[in-house]
Length: 488
Image (cartoon, rainbow, N blue to C red):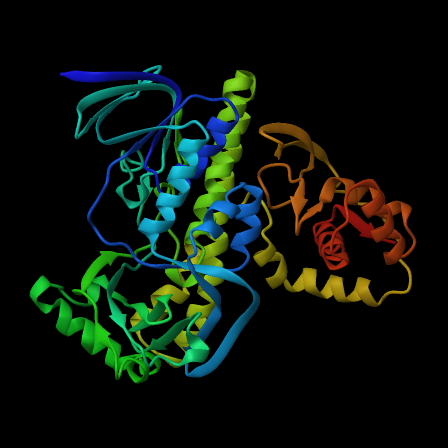
């Protein structure tokens, strides 16, 4: 028997980083939100959030709450990757977090901003209008109806698994982990993640305090049949192959049992189904090596909140807003996959086995045709070559090229998706407005008016916004190589 009925603007399934963030934003913007969260006893992998996460948390107005939780600081990583030792240090701190604690901070913040938390699990969904969810929890069964549903349920994929989830990367990964107490861990590394690659796998160690760490090995799921009785033996055997960790764990003691979870990557054929959106890990999961899972979830939640707010405010924008969200989710997934593929390709040249070869080639499987990513621009030899020529040229002389064609591009302004002028660039299916952090449309209009690079940068900053001068040159180089502008 239904004990409670809630009728809201938006029902959000899952209160991890994506769900809690989307709920907090939408509630703060005046939308009624039901946040459905089912507690789980299952452990989760610790996360290393880089210092750059602080900027995103500040933008989302979550920074004070996260700083107030006093998570262990993250100042970088120590690695032995493909046989080479390296240290990547940051002057400002990120965070090393247990996901349960981090999620709780964001969930509590969402509730203070007006989201209604429902402690329950989703039992069924009726995708009529409005969408209706039946949930069951400690207080019995309840029913939620909403004009939109956000699936923020992560790997569970409550909506995503209804034919949208794709797992065709060519490999699957199992994370096997345990926590350790280690009073003798080198003091200089107390705030650093430690990473080690070896034949057929890799390992990492995330500090949760100066004397406690979670150490994880990543192996091919298909390489071995793992039974619970074999899990500890497998884990210890793998740790012995991770030279950096084996040395540091010599005087350590395990603090709990060994456990395993799926760490495979996946994406979705599309990031929405009607008025149901796939957000964060429900839409796609990236390699833990990127240390970008939480940042990706937070950004995805912001995009989803803006898109839903737009659809509720201006129904005529719904097709453009939903298409924008889908394209953005695919772009981000592709960017992360290509970034980690660079590391995997380096490892594959040293560790000559299927584990590394399959991961090194995975980026070729991603079709991202919607926006030129910073990663792609940085690896495009024509863009790099043009950049160097422009940087060293005493004068600048460009004119509108044969491919300068304008169209309408969907972009976020404030809390809504709007249509603004974009460029129809060859090789991309939708008009483009931004790349390398630069407004390409305005840059294309300004560049023919300028006779040298300094005047171009000054005029761009006067008309648009102050940016890194190198980004202006990258954007200009991209427009020239694609024929939008021509050098004269």
